[in-house]
Length: 557
Image (cartoon, rainbow, N blue to C red; front, side):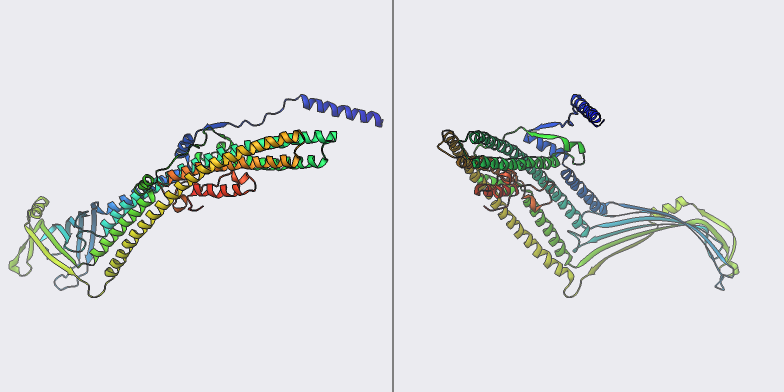
């Protein structure tokens, strides 16, 4: 029974295995590929980069600040309608009965601060309809109307500039500053995309180089195994070759991971990162890195940087802001002398109360008299029947040391400080542009030397392999030649990448300062990935910092 049960179990297992083998394998999820040139990547970043889209809102925010500052000079209209009902107790022997007064007041007016010469004006009109049982009134109901005009003109302080005009001018300057920040953000984003694109190109090339090295190591393992099997080589040669294969596999894994990481950095720059589908798009760069040696025109680049760099334009705007503050502070030291003019017109009407004065003061009310209409009251008002003029000059002058003098001294020093900062920024800009130019020249020469080194390493490996085949060399020297070739290829890739990043940096530094000195929309730029997977070696140690400085614009090397 045990034998029969075992045979049945084995039969079921074989049947299940056969069915599994015949079942169609589930294909892996398809990953779309996006073939991109560097210019297409830059365009996608300018359209979709989230940090850049956020920075594009800064000028709009500044526009609202300008509008708010200009709103001070808009005319303000005011109007009102009130009713007042009052019953006063008989508190005087002249008024032995309670007095009731019912008044309806309407008013309208306009006031404005003009954007010139600090002038302010206001105009208001009011009308009151009063109904009262007081026997002392001459009109019941009573209609009164008033027109008031006021004009104030500073003659010394606030004549050329005042707080409102200073705020408006400052907001307009800051609006220009917002434009420079957006322009700087565009430059940084473009540079970051180009740098990451060339990093990806180099990382993919490094994967190819590591794959080639691994294939050479595996071929050596195959040859050594055959020789060990026939007794022509000691087992140690096979172990050494197998160890080299393991080391090359590790380097290949590192290089492949660097490609994935660089792809992710490029996705963040050119896609909306909240779109989960974009993370599954494979990016295939189709442009080859520019390696044609150029001779940068340093003087022309410096001239362009001094004229066009966004950080220098911002420093000049800081000087303009400081000069505006100094002008306002100097104006506030002057005495406050103002010419004031006021005009008030009145009109009176209603139903006149007739009195019989023969019985004494105030006379007996014998009936209504002449009715003065509201139109007649307005004619009195605008015809200046009852005008009142007031004109004068007011002077305010503080005695002793004032805060205005201290503010002016501070503003003057701050303007000088802004000028010195501009000079300092211009000096740094010149140094950064020249440093980027020297890096282009240096890395162009490095490309030539590393290419020659790689070609010599290829020749040496070919010679060692031929010597090994005829028994004139050992597995150790072949492995060493393979390592030297892999390192030479990594050094050449690192030099090409550093050259490309230096070109990107040279162009960006003519339009904006280094990314670390501003709040641009670009992501922090990364170090080249080639040198990171190149393994130990003096050339690899040099390639990483040099290329990193080419990206970030850090002086040195």
